Image (cartoon, rainbow, N blue to C red; front, side, top):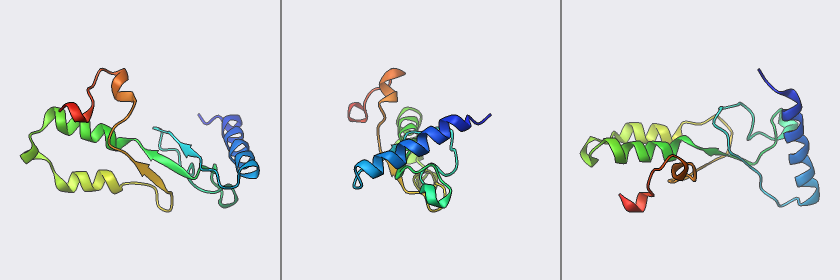
Length: 110
């Protein structure tokens, strides 16, 4: 079920942010894969400038925990790092603050 009021709120917030600070950047942290988060409002999106590619930190931790370096699939890594919605800008990163919540260690500790 989609919460239309929440979507309108996010659209209005992004619009207001851009009106007050035209050079600002907004970033959506989303795990639902909701389409259009990183698309401008005038193009039918929610108006965020970027969305976080949150699958990348999970991929790195899974590889470090479960696979030896020789077992890493370069095709799988490439797919995970480039798999995104067409025409939406995204940010990929290696570590997530969520890792500390579930008790994982930082990549520098592997």
